[in-house]
Length: 161
Image (cartoon, rainbow, N blue to C red; front, side, top):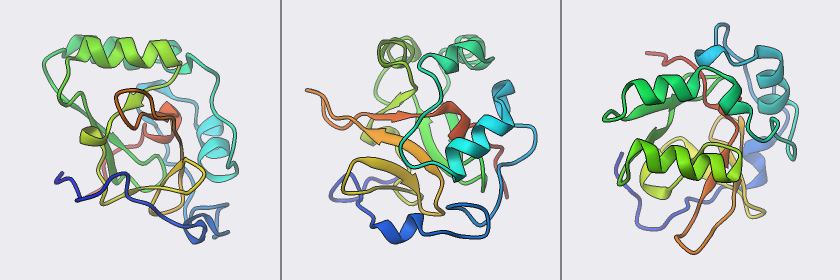
């Protein structure tokens, strides 16, 4: 993932215009990773602009155990609708640092260097979305820069070729 000159890469409301399945052309994939709930994912990803999975939801899935089982490897996070690569983490920090920050905020928290800007956009109100209309979460900047608090159910997809 090469970083664009200016981040976050902004998008406009047209990305989230109604499509065949809510704000996306397709429903959430079957068999999401980390045992994420498909019904919750479909509601959050495609029929929602403001709400999120419950704070700490990611800790009730298999995600943390998966991350801890490979502390020296990056994890790719794919759009739960399309399977496109959205984030790769951790980058520029350790897995423990990534998990600590995510726990502190209640959602997986990504930084600019971990974001695949080819497929991710920020809307003017801070909503973070995929270019295909999947609601991902929100950009909640802190003293270290942009911090994308993302619903795990939105990025638990399987890679599509």
